[in-house]
Length: 159
Length: 325
Image (cartoon, rainbow over all chains, first blue to last red; front, side, top):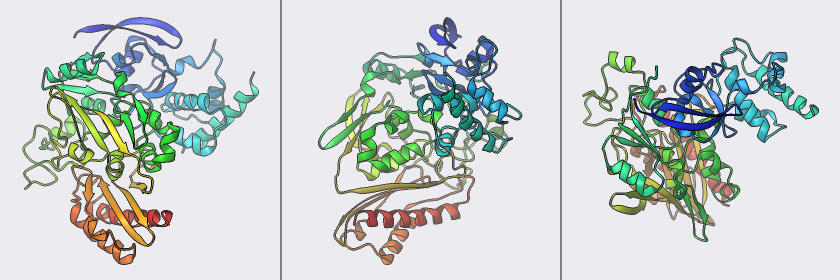
């Protein structure tokens, strides 16, 4: 299989990699870079577990070719914590029990992260809209919405 | 490791290069956002030799407002369109339809042209390879029999796009570019009633531009029902646009999605010139029943979808009639 060189930024670090034309972003992140935080769920764009940020916007890594993010900035769930400290959003998911089995959590976090960057004080409808593409089979969503609300409040307090 | 068949990824720098790449081989496909094509590739429903990524072509990204029309590039993402402030002011029904397409992470990638050209769907088609193999492949892919209509002579997979019906109700035209140059036609002309070949595009052609006339006195709307209300294709959807003059229904356009292999326009010219009443609504329901061909292509049965289309249409047109007063 022919490979082409791409250059992109992953979690703030510039990279150049030779990748096959038919490689999906989720496989590149998980298998080539070892960033297994991004989860592969339904494989069809229905569950949102593979949500990552491409140039700040939420995208489904299982429905995206890595060639098509050449030159872009990709952020995964691994970028959220700093020096072992959880981000305000992660902390909120932890404290408000927004995560149970945890499989949907990376996708939920990245979709919520995209929302909070654009709308630091979202109401419940805005949160539901931003997470519309993310399935969770454990929480019933109530605790996830509470987590995002709590994170929004804490981000405002944090310097 | 990758589940995808091998293909070449081509990123042209101009539309001319894109057309040349597409025209070069019959198994080359256009890629833009990939939200429709890539899941189908993963399921082995299409196996192109090459994909031509047009998502970064600047000439397909233009939005231009003129006095009498709005011109939209086919590669603009649905997210960008929904965020265009003037669009909601002038075409609220279009923005409603756009925001009802999938979820935010799809809309950040999915393009307008890609949405119009999305593949038809069917419960016997949108399945994994092992499912389809064990059930015998269907007419749309490798098989010899349409499982929905075994006595039929074509594939009956249904078109489930949300945006095309609204654009058709608003009288949109499209530009298609290809090896033979550019041609303009009403959006209706893009579709043909055959589930396995529902687009009239010739080899090497792609939709480049969508042109919307700016009518002042028209009132338009879009309604859909779906299984999963957060994100889903329409089980059925109805777009309507009407013009009211006093108590007269001057013009009424109605387009239904999710029932046929094309977004189907229902001829309601017999109602124009009259007024909107319960009788007119019944007559419209009859016309819809005649035009739509609801079969067992979704998880919900045909009877429900046929009835819900008529109910939605009545509700929507009544709302628009009130709005226009």
